[in-house]
Image 1 (tube, helix red, strand yellow):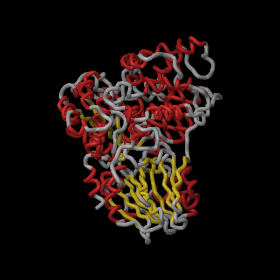
Image 2: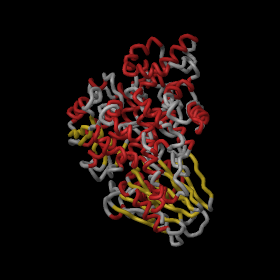
Image 3: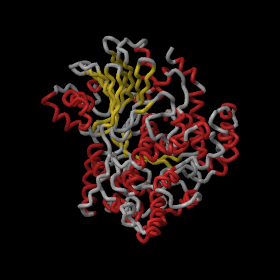
Length: 637
């Protein structure tokens, strides 16, 4: 786990002040790699790499980067290829290894298989590799987007880095991308390659990039396809799920430093912590954030139950409003740009706690999107089941649960009555894609606060529908698979963005064992009526690991996913922060925002509304990056 950056000439001419560029970019991502710094430049100064090291595997100097192969191929690499031991054994006849690192396995695999080496890598990674023989840059990002990769073409130079902020000093201007802004205001995350920084793009999950002879090519090398297997019993799916989760845990525990675990009190992180503690054979360390300042936000009782049951030593942090006041600007800075919900703030606090004890921590990210853990799936399905019952279309492949079977699980929606009221406020029974868009659209209560005339909402809706209705991925028309597929493709990378930035802000490596591509590819073959039997969220995971998880956890009806008492804080202890921010001259000058309307309406936001959170982070982002653009430009001088 590290930070990478680099510059490559498109014209073949030497890059001006290459050493300065590399040093500045490395400095801006130093938090990602506190254990060392390295640079490499080609003899002609047409390409150069920078690296900040967080030493996890092969702690010796032989694992340092950028790494240069005997054939003059160079690599700067971030992440972990967990099957590096198996790769090393396979590649040993073709390569003389000089280190015990997974980085060198990537070099060896590339030497033998060229760009097809990506199919052999099992893990999380983002890397740039310079092939001196072909005069070609080859870059790739892991299948799920666990590790980040940003790039920008400025003049005749391609710049890349682990974090977008490292590219800002070299941009012609720091401006907002209107397409990305429209996506953010709609979903609170982007659904394409554009970022909120105009001119900065992300290499999408499962994509690779080459630059050769001045030509830039980007392509998808992996995708998940829902080829449903109807030929096996539920017992087979449970058995195979247990096998694949166990395999993934074993690989994710490979480390030359101690490994801990996040423990939120939910199913996914609890399962990972329990299985990891058992596999390690000794007492592990786990980490939990709680809110005790307001009722209804403290989930520590579940975290303690799991920790006590599996013998893990639990470290807790009680997070209060002053922590928010003191750290929210740091959170926005490390995020690069606003993304996802308020969970990034407690994630920042818990990661800081974990980094004081371990260098690697396991989390449960991915379980909701893969196995169906969001209450909105149940709500959307409930509506479509009613529609199917009225229309008599239960058996057309769209609806795999019936009204009768779904009713016992509807008690899970007790905490979501405001969401249900808003969802149904503008009608019922529309096309499935329009109804799901309505369910995840965060902009429905921003009519006064945002100048929508400056943004293209129709394009956002069209892009959403293109992903949601992509029959290349979801061939069988199961509504559940269509919902989870969209969230897997679009929401999950945003959550992984948070996971990466909030951990790496403290030099901590976060691993996500539920995101292992053999497991994901298998899960995509499981029929929806097994993953979502009777509308039971995470049915497959819960039944597979029923003997491992505490009964109190399996029977929970109130898990909400790291809720933060923002409404109480913004109308109480932190009211002055919100008022001062949106009453400022800078906030009033934003071309897209009606700051007085924000102040006028924010008190109306519901308990779990993200309206004020989203706009507050957007304003703090503008202050940190746009308003201080001269400081960023000065770094390039």
